Image 1 (cartoon, rainbow, N blue to C red):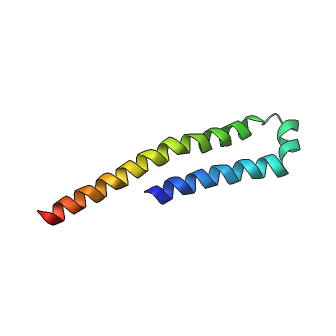
Image 2: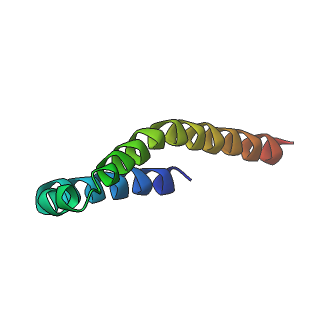
Image 3: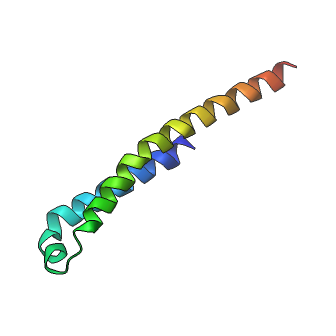
Length: 70
């Protein structure tokens, strides 16, 4: 699950950077500056998601080890 969370973080970061670098003027002209904030929010909310996925993977590993020893 962790790779999916990391991929989401990277996707939001790349989308935000592309918009910031290449489309900043267009966003301003058309009143879409909130798209940059959406990318930032997606990136930042990815960190709690990453923490949850790391905990989930650790718990799954622990359950599999316990089932294998029983």
